[in-house]
Length: 408
Image (cartoon, rainbow, N blue to C red):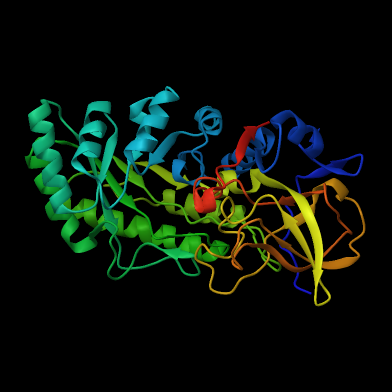
């Protein structure tokens, strides 16, 4: 038997069924018309933001990283909760524009921005987080051609990383950002070109559950930003300190200690250098805000045994939940939080493998999991599906198509 990950505590049952937003999963599926289905909870998004606001220093702003979940209704809901938005493509730019989000609240990062994307960003008035000297110079040229002053920040590749992060995005050779020692020179070039210099973006890593490591890294980010601002010779308008806050996916994972991070950051804010004393600080979070608020629902279409092993075969799979299948950066596959949603309160009595409908052995949603007895027609719930699910999975694989999404 292999344990499943921890189901977020916010979920409860109604008449024995998993409930999301006060509604039974069977009712949600009936309203949607079919499975597979992603369901996102407004109440859980609201609560996560409230908890974050309570724990973090008052002056710290919170941005939503759209790449985590670009579902239009969810993005629109987040507009009323967060201070800003971080995007990484022209497609995401169009999405925030459609949501009516003020471009002053938007920053655009990414190491491979095409000229058309730079032009769209300049026309929209969002802040471009420049990742190289070459990208900055293309931005100058496009701005001059358009007759528009571009808003520009510099993304820094720091000489340190976030310890224990799932994906390291700083320290050493990286495609992201400009090596720290070259940043002051580029900032001077941006200012000399007449662009609107907005500040720095320093992102070190993601998916960390180590609060002490996050606090240490945030301190290192502040120290680096202060050194760069001193070298530039002017106060720093804004500092995007990145994210890194993780959520528990696997057995044994413990939730992040927000209070430790908030207290450590408050102490640092109380002792800022002159070049940072009036700086606007923000962090960018995606997975941490939306991940636990989402559930993937998929129906069992067949139950079978092979050499004494039970398989529950669903109408969903890795084409919607690549991460849960273990094929999105996981070295050793472990089970996500999984449950039989239509028997949510039932006793776990059998070991079963939950697999998807694709013709590949990679299509696994749970291995050797101890679950209630389930049969054809029952609904399986995969939790922590609110980030990097629908948009980060190969929905076109084998012609299966996308899952439906709802915000409740």
